[in-house]
Image (cartoon, rainbow, N blue to C red; front, side, top):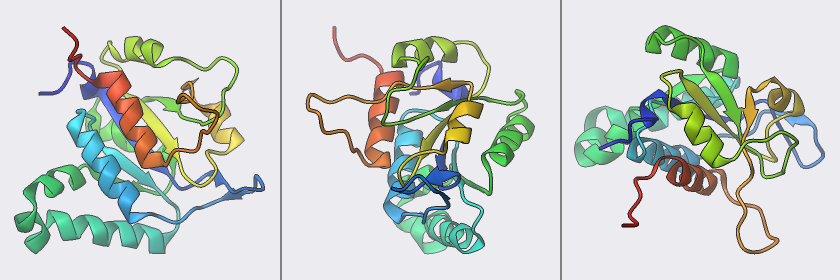
Length: 194
């Protein structure tokens, strides 16, 4: 059973525009584990879709091959739960095209974008504030960056920047798939506390 507010949430794993260690804008390589784990988290918490964003045709082909293995033929029969998760994956070359796809297929209009970062930004919003924003029926696209994070332009164009995840140490370098699971749990999980 999904929570009532998750039906208007979409996720995006952006491989472009992201930055490298030097701050240069790049297109990063797709990672098999990120797609598997993020799709499973998206399915578990009731997101509508996971968009994989890359303008590189060879990387798009890789994602298509990975997804189709688990959604068609032997892979789908061998592991139906994996199939259910990977059926949520959509491939787009830009974030704007993902937003257009949501507007057309979802029929709810263009989604507002909320981007993530491991660094604190002025005016960023908390998880609890984002939960409040999800309550109306308006669609939201929650964007996770790869490499060393989303480009500055991408951050500035977003409707909101989400507060970073803080642990109980100074170390702050989670994998994108770990960050996705933590954020989705804090945002959408049913409380088990009585």
